[in-house]
Image (cartoon, rainbow, N blue to C red; front, side, top):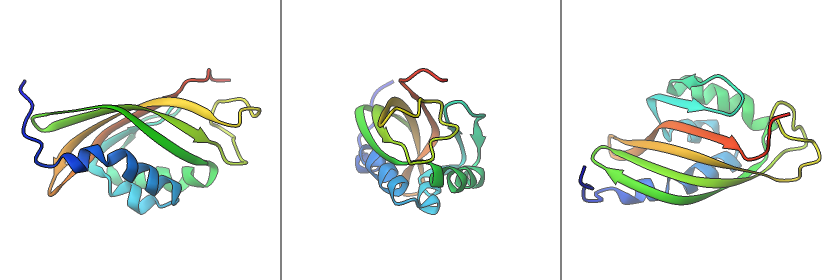
Length: 138
């Protein structure tokens, strides 16, 4: 498949920054706005979350227990009506680290992510979001 002209590259290239900014601002409305109506969120150690409204509800519940995140995009590809970004992240857990699967002694966690985006109106939005931690569970 041939790469399409990057008619909206900023929306794809800037998605990690926009995602981290909304996450670190603890803003579930801004986070949900980055996802399509039928998006699927696949958090580590939890069932998949299907749909924009359930994703917003997931963030509303999760943000109070989560700390700050820094996303580092490693590669982005845009082909036809899909864009894929892979990267790594560093995560500083909040004081309440329950349910995240890493040792309480960990001061910072690392992981990797895959975002798949599709054009949605005037913007690229996330349709699939998958991430996991580099540290073993337990």
